[in-house]
Structure formats: C-alpha cells, structure tokens
Amino acid sequence: MKTNYFDKLLAEISKTGKPNFEDSEYIRQFFMPINSARNTILEEQDKIPEHLYFINSGFMRLFYYDQNGEEQTTFLCSQNGFIASFSSLINQTKATENVECITDCELLKISYSDAKLLVDRSEIFKNFFLVMFEKSISSAALRANDLASLKAEQRYQKMMDQQAHFIQNIPLQYIASYLGIKPQSLSRIRKQAIK
Image (cartoon, rainbow, N blue to C red; front, side):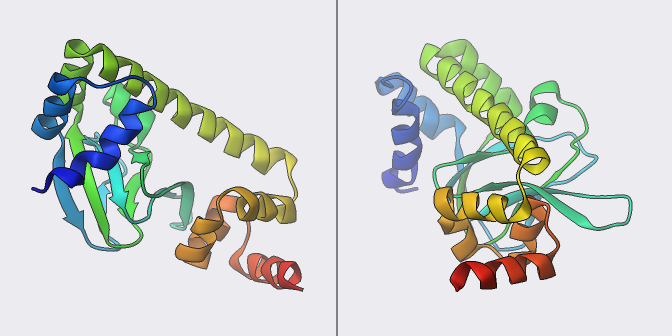
C-alpha cells in the first residue's frame, strides 16, 4: 500500500506528540488500509466491537435502532477523524450502535488488541489514544447538552457554522436524526435559513 495512505494519520498523531521512526513503523504494521462502499455497516449493534477506524476520506456515522425500529444517528465523522462505538470498544461490551459508511470510504482500521499493544509499547500512542477518547466523550456530552438546551434552529445553525461539510455531503435524514429534528422540520428550517 502506498506510504501516503498513512500520512494523514501520522499528521493527526503529530498533533499530540512527535512520532519517531519506530512509531511510524507501528502504524504501518498495526493499521490495515481498507476501502469500504457506501451504506456498509462495519460494526453491528449488540455485538462486541472489534476495530477502531481512522477516516482517510469519506463520511461515516454511528446509529442505533430505537424501540420503533427507527434509525437514530448519534455521531457523524469525516476525513481525519476516528470512529467506533467508543465506550463499548474500550470496555469490550456489546455495542449500542452500528458503525456505517455513509459514502465510499478509504479507512485505516486497528483491532482493539493491537491498539492495546500500541499503548503499551509507545508513549506517543498512549497520549494520542487518551486525547482521542477524551474528545469522543466531550463530543457526546456537548451534543447531549445542545439537544437539551438549544432550539432546533440553533442546533442547525451551529452545524452550519462549525460543520458545514456535513450538511453538504450527508443525506438530510441523517443530519435531521443527529440534530434531533424531524426531516420535514429540518427542510423548513433550511428554507428559512436560505431566505
């Protein structure tokens, strides 16, 4: 596989510490490049998660089926981001969410056992994974707070301001579900925003 397949991941890791040659070799050894087609579910709800995914290109989401069988999107992720059913992966418990490719994706995946090995072998990876999991927890808490405290229009506007690339590349029903808005209500909010 081309070396540049790993460049974006190395750049992300470099934000928390400078990887040495050995760290770079660990990436090539433990992260497996895969291409995944749109609408592919990589990890399933009610099964113990096996992998953590880094997105080289494409858009992904976490979602679960509620008691009515409706899909509820809980997390959206794009290039240079990590995705997994994080708490289930760390605790090796049955996942409460599915991991799905919204678009065709180029990914690097690492198994839970290999990620643990990396943390044991490298201080850089230990710090990096710690920061990454903290971000995932913070992101979930922030979303919960937004759903509780912001009006639908404010939630949409915040996404427009901070994550416009999601709105431009992800189907409307997933955006609506993530923002806790009915698709028809989101269509109305979008029309009003355009005026």
